[in-house]
Length: 623
Figure (cartoon, one colour):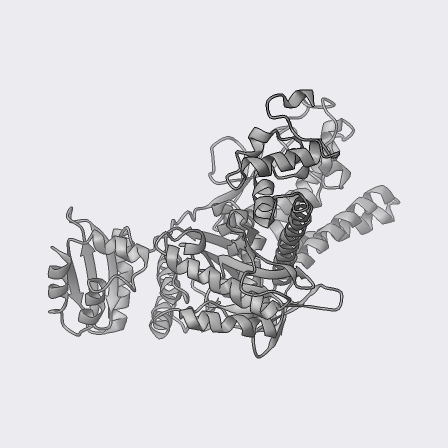
């Protein structure tokens, strides 16, 4: 069917709740959705493309026809939608790869045993602890046991590799006893292995109790060396336990979910708590999800997919923002759990700190998938929240004016892309509209010229043809007030702020026309804005120095007969330095389009014949 035919069919649908099923020419189901009113929802797909995200446009382009199923309520439609998505896994729905499987802790049966994390249980004579539903928990448990009891985590085989190399770094930071050095007896090693296995089997509290009894017995028997070793182990276990308490919360069981976006990609992070302790962590990177500012529909799709794959649903789910169809989802999750489920959106306190930690995990995972650093995304997210932006700014433009008492008035424009300098988009401006010093008028002129270029090049979507997500001016309310009319004149809705410095020329706050926003308490955002302000100042002042130097050089050239400002600038543009102009022959000077032979001879005579001798054009070398 054509788009027109699909729309005509959609307009004949009833205004009833239901599920719609999009199919391609091969009869494959490519998308499943639910609607409160089928006609309204489905017809939106086949109307104007302007409000569609790229992923939706691609899906619609592949639709050949659609089916639908009427439901008695929107809730029934939601339940059916989740069931059908799980069954058919359509291409354009959010699909999460469920790699949850059982994990194990393996204790090898060698003479010198090793403890390791594995995904599968083998019939190899080794002892296996588990299964564990959380691979993250099993990995951490092994790491903690190896550190506490100073056991090797390397691939060396004992006694084959005794004394073949120096101990690694873990030995020197007291995280391994270095049996590879050959100084540790087999009995000592086995005692450490057995203690580690007890720790893994019984947990920290029972392990501490058992080790305390052994330590006291060793002290009574005057075996102070053993008592000291046990004391150190108890301290190590307690230290690990204290670290875990950092992420302990007052609610016994809950999931914390946050999303981070960059461009068309997103990452959902889930941190799960049981018995007031973190027991699992999962990350899901989803490509080409779109760039909707509020992500409410994406949150709803994620929740439906995630809890369709999980049996244990907690009583509390903490989210960074409300999902679409909030009440429907709460009812659906409550029905799956058999008890009431509620959503929370904390803005302060312990739960908000846990949510921030979850967001940072999402940022780190998404950054890794896109080949850069997580702290850069976290900084952009922090800045976005601070300034009340709809989403983290991918492209940030910053401007600064530089002059010396009004002379050589110039400006610099820098671009940060994804939290990093994007130097190929840096631009320089020479102020042309007036003479003298007026930073406000200069900033007004620069932004006017910049957005005039935008409308000339916007079809390209590159360079000046791309709108920034945020503009930061080096200055306060005055600079913002000078530029705001420019944005209003062009009808552009681009967030605009100024960067305010303190008495020591350091970044202090961000301002718009009516308020100052302190950023000193937001470490990552503060660092990002400080870097932007320092970089734009460096770039602008660097251009100003170049302009002043060229003016000085140009002034020295204008002392030559026949050389005015235009010819001086042309000579410097071609030869770059006075030294090269001095070394140039007359024919080389004549290659500059603004020069004629008398002017070229005048320059040559000035540097080669300061006594004023006449040039013999026929035999210049003899003079």
